[in-house]
Image (cartoon, rainbow, N blue to C red; front, side, top):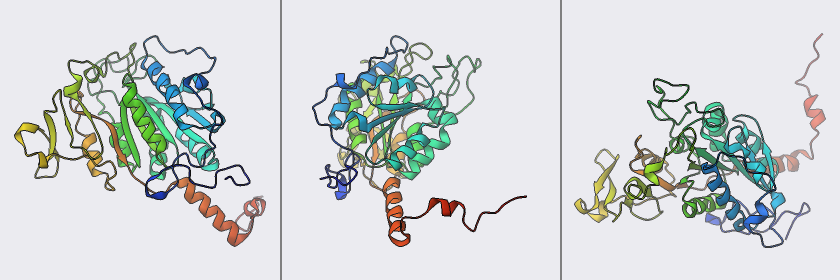
Length: 364
């Protein structure tokens, strides 16, 4: 069933707690779709070997799962290599201005509940000039999905250090090594009270798709950090997580409800120390009951935050997967409820009368 505007009036999805899911207000596609339906006729213009190609292919392959009409999907980007993304998605899109994609997407998502709104941004775009816009979108819990491509470098402007570059990083703008302590995007998002935070890797399509799927199903702001290789200016930045010789020892794959263990034979694990901090142990040396069980739905973000702090600069003990996924009132819904209440109590309202009301005056 639909209302006068053609929007669904019944819940179509399975959001936890019986609430509307992220896609419940978005019209469904009439015909079955494939990845080809989401590819444009534009030449993809990234450097050969760039990790963006893998992410683009994963997203185009995943989009049909949403079952949404293409005209009801929007990709908004800022400035950077990743921000060419909207050109290559056969949906609506906007290549906006540096760092402001979350702000533009927030306005769009809040005013158009019939759209599935996605933001594509990079570590420089989102965490430097766009840092303020990012954290406020997260705390407001606007119903949009943010894909943050993190390559630990400024690629478009040819190799300067970025807000996620490691301490001591030698680049064109830091010839003697960076003195800045880097941002941890997952920790930052959790500190901003984000309701969904995930992390994946460009080259692991199966894992990336699973995190994208979880983000799409979430109602509210979902941030997914994607480790993305820049083979021109910061090649092999995440190689320990990709190399078959090291990845099992370095990568922690988070699964809700499962003990946090990793390693070629599941030999490494995490327990709580007496001071409540997380401690890495060998599974054989502790009681299985003492191993920390991952709870992505915990109301308190401290569990997810502690996990985000496990990895060091070497990338040893790097968690990937869904860190947090909780229900909280969504800004868009609260805004519509407020407007509806105002209409019921004050009539349709007169914007002109409001702008020229008693609180205005003439100068001169």
